[in-house]
Image (cartoon, rainbow, N blue to C red):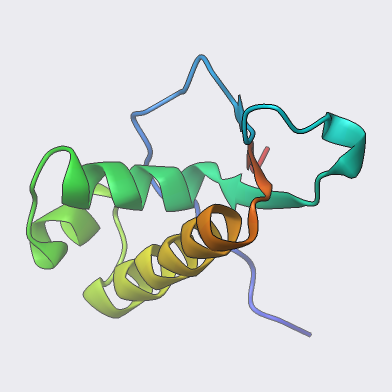
Length: 93
């Protein structure tokens, strides 16, 4: 049986939850889903310019878990930008 998922603290609740390439109909696009945790990790690092340990503390997680979440966000965002996919921000709840 897997370990229960821990609740990580997120302060950011985006008003806009979908991004897509301009001029491409939605029915023709693949979608990459980013979790609220991934967006929060990305926001803390690149918008708030926080170091990883400080951002991890703010999210109530370890630095290694924060790094894993951030790396997952990087991969998904890069996939969407390079391969012309839509990005959907999903709630974990």
